[in-house]
Image 1 (spheres, rainbow, N blue to C red):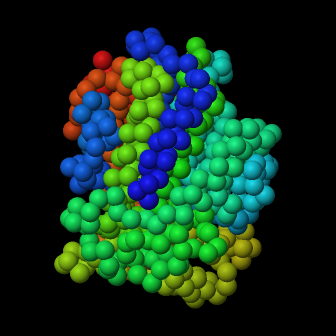
Image 2: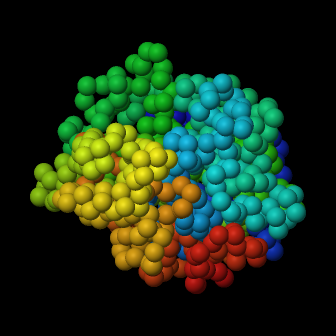
Length: 545
């Protein structure tokens, strides 16, 4: 793993020089050549403090020391998931407006489970895998990239890149020239016919390099000596998950011993972020982004932090090592941007789509409240309650995480009032000591509620939301005993970093509370374009020169 950093840097520099990409003047232009939106998946706000002493001066610290820092940036919706988070960042709207209420939800009319970027009218490109039939069709309203393209009569480019489909698609919005994501079954970047009829030659050529195979041919060792990870839990502990080829969650992680190779593993490795940088830099070179008379837009969502957090948790050495290596990826990205456009000719922001909770078993062992919610027990109790109350089976259409959908068609055929059933079910569930609050559709459609129910209300969508929605207690983690999850309205999930740097961004900081929905209107005002259509945020004060 140590070797791949130098290999990747060499690849990046050679890709820049071999394409003879013309460097723009270093003097500041009247508008930026490029807008770069960076999302680090599952980046808690405290990580920037926790790892600060081990960061270089050219990655996270450069944005902190040279740019503008919003120290108290929060999400104002629940659930805190990847889909809603990315959509809110780039639309400036709450899920109740942009419609991405979760990563997945149930269609109340058909009973089908819907992925937030699912689109069965398009076909995958670069893969035969049906899961890649993806587009932003379910996103309501415009995004910042749409408004930027509209302001320039659609002469500019916008492209989204991520290991995750939703991390690539939602930031680039509707009018994107392309969105590319990683298909871990084949180890390649793919897209869909929503954007184009075939993959560009440069994408095909990039995939043929088979960088994932190269990265997975080396074991994952720590970047620094083990004693440098003093603020992490022990390397061998019961709070972390393991790879299928391991018996213990310890370094080194023997990727080289996989046979056959499993490309999905790269998602759970810092090399996943390296691969994302590789592809993003090659994209900017090949697409000649930022070299025309217009302002182009690129979003880069780094996903490995999320995968590693889910498997190993927020206190693991694996998570810390990923953060330190991501800092080097940011340094590599900024070096490329400086060399290509000039420091004052691009504007960049960095934030996260959500945070995460520390593993509850680890907390409990250290006398902090923590427990696992019995999701299977919830499903069984809901079905049993409805059967005992109404004498009918299968009145529950489905349960996804905190969302309970009732079968309205079946209830109406039995002359059961869904609103009445929802209220009775909510009253029953509130007796569960692991549940903080239960809300029905009727309550969410009513007057503004108080915290934490108001965050759930900000994600309510009449065509997509469930009949009964649950807010769990603060000490709970759902679904798994190792690693971590995120869903809640509490600060460990909602408090994220927000850093700005570049064109017309002054050096400074604010400790005032900033909402994630403020990013899009702030960027729109900086660029002097229309705000995205559903924006309910405000401009962050003091950020502009």
